[in-house]
Amino acid sequence: MIPISDPDASPATPVPYSLPPLSGIGLKSVHYTHVLDDDTAAKRPSWVEVHPQNYFGDGGPAHRWLTAIAGVYPLSFHSVGLSLGSADGLNRDDLENIAALCDRYQPALVSDHLSWSGNAHDRYPDLLPIPYTQEALHHFAGEIGKVQDRLQRTILIENPSRYLSYRDDEMSETDFIHALCKQSGCGLLFDINNVEVSATNVGLDMEAYIDAIDPGIVGEIHLAGHAREEHDSGPLLIDDHGSIVSDITWNLYRRFIERAGPKPTLIEWDSNIPEYDVLMAEVAKANAILINPSLEEPRHALAR
Image (cartoon, rainbow, N blue to C red; front, side, top):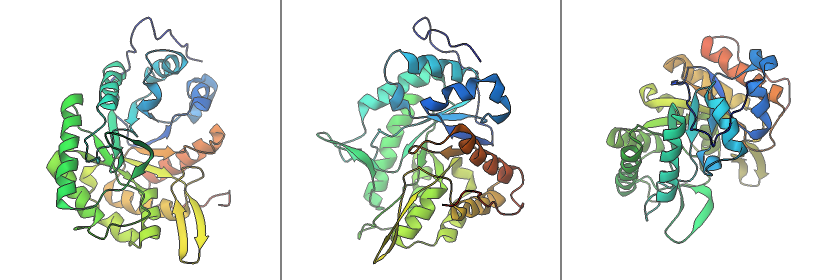
């Protein structure tokens, strides 16, 4: 196993990576030893992603592990707390903490969400939707500009999982995303599970959504599982990141990769954390599509 150094002695000196167009994993503490163990070298991801909010403390075991991992793997920072869509403006404390972590670990990519999660008085443990209006577009692009100016880098914004639509929307989600990227200079973190979730919940055409996205704005892809509830009004999908990727999402992913070519792809699993081999089996499926998207569609040995 690769030794873990003392993080209080000096900042990490990560290898200056960019993300390879292969599959990575969302890093959880239960898998720290697996990704650094020489015995599992043949089953390693190509890169790892972390939520920077989990590393806002100055030291301790989490930083010792991340220091070691950052010396081996390219890193992506996926923020969940900037609240870029808040009318009161972004979370400045989170931004300063992320800036410090970027200086320390030099991640290849930094991303956040097309959402808001609080205001000047309250913080909410969720990623809440924004309306797709010109006013919201102008505001959100301005907040992205503040982040990019502070971090001195382009960031990615993730398309949301939606459970409702605003009556006053002035444009489609895909049109809003393209306009946002053009106006702010940001890129898209394309979450394909979120396409299935949103399309099912608010009545969108999944394939039309996939086909509408310009591959040139996509810097990273997320794949994840979701939960399903049956109601009298129809199914409700919940973006819980707690299971294998659905066959529908795999097929949408294949459809996009056939057109776009290989893109860095994350297997995102945040609840009901699986055994490492289960996670890496999903990584292998993504890599197979990235290498040859025309192969036969994947089928899971595990039932959903």
